[in-house]
Length: 437
Image (cartoon, rainbow, N blue to C red; front, side, top):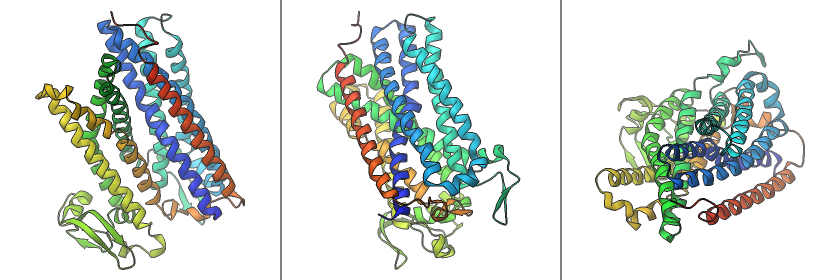
C-alpha cells in the first residue's frame, strides 16, 4: 500500500471509529439526565433503573472515546507533521478548550457514577447534566477545528509564511456554526435511533417490557425531534458550502457543468470521463434554490474548477446520497412516531412501528459516516482549503502501511470488546436493578 494512501486510510479508520463513540458520548448523558429527572419527580423505580443502566453505557463509551481520541491526537502529529507545524499555532485553541471540557466531563462522570445516595439528589442529577453539557462542548470544539480546515481564517498567508495569527478568529471561522449545528443534531439523530432501536428489539422479544418501554420513549423522542430538525441544518450547511467550497458542492451533486436553474440530482451514477450522470432523477432548478435560495441562480460546476483541484466525484456523490437517503428514511419514521403519539395511540403498541425502529437502528450512524466522508473527501486535494494540499502535509516516514494494519486490528478488537460489554449490559437488565414497587 502506498504510504500516502496508508496515512489517509489510517486517519479515516480512526475518525470512523471515534465519531461513533463521540456521538454517543455527546448525547447519551442527556438521555440519562432525563430518565434521572423523571425518577426524582415521580419516584418510579423503573426510571432509576434506566438511569443506572444508561450511566454504565455512558461510562463504557467515555472510556473508549478517550482511547480513540488520544490515538487521533497522536496521529495528527505523526501522520501529518507539516500540517501541524503550521496549523497547530492557529487552530490549537479549540483543541486546548476541548481538553478542558473533557477534564470537566471526567470529573462530573466520576461524581455521578459514585454519587448515588451520597450527594443531595438534585446535585447528583446536576452532575449528570454537566457530563452531557461538557461532552457536547467537546464535540462542538473539535468540529470548530475541522471547520477551520474547510474555511481557514485567523492568519495571513504571505510568501509561504503564516503570520498575524488570531486564534479566536480561527476558532469562530465562517464554517464553524453550520458544521457544529449539523453535527450536533446528527449526533442526537444517530444516538436516538440506535438506542431506541435496541430497546424496541427487546420489547419485541418480550424481555423486561416496562423497563425497555420507558427507555424507548425517551430515546425515540430525542431522535425523532432531531431527525425532523436535521434537514433545516442541512439546508444551512448546503448554502454555506455553495459559497465557500463550490468544488465540494459540485462533487456532492455530481454537477459537472455551470448553469442557471441547475437541477437537483437524486441518485445516479457519475460518469467522470464523459462529464455526466446516468440514471439520475433530476429536479429542475432545485439545486439553484438549495444553494442560493433562488430557482434561477447560477451554480458553479466542476468545469469551472481546475482539474487538479477537483475532489473525487463518485465517492463524494455516493456518500452525500447515502447521507440524505438515511436522513429522509429516519425523518419518515419520526413523522409516523409523532402521529402515533398525538393521533394514533394504538400504533404505539403495534409491532410494525417497533420493527421500523429496529430497522432504523444503524441508519443514523451510517448517515454520520457518510456525512464525514463528504466533509473530508469533498475538501480534497486540500488539507487546508486553498492553502495546503494533503499530499504536502503527509509524513515522509516509510512503512506507514504496517501502522495502518496494526491500528485496524486494534480498532476492530476495541469494537468487539465494546459490543460484548454492551450486549452483556443489556442482557443483565432486570437482574441487577431494583424491582418496581
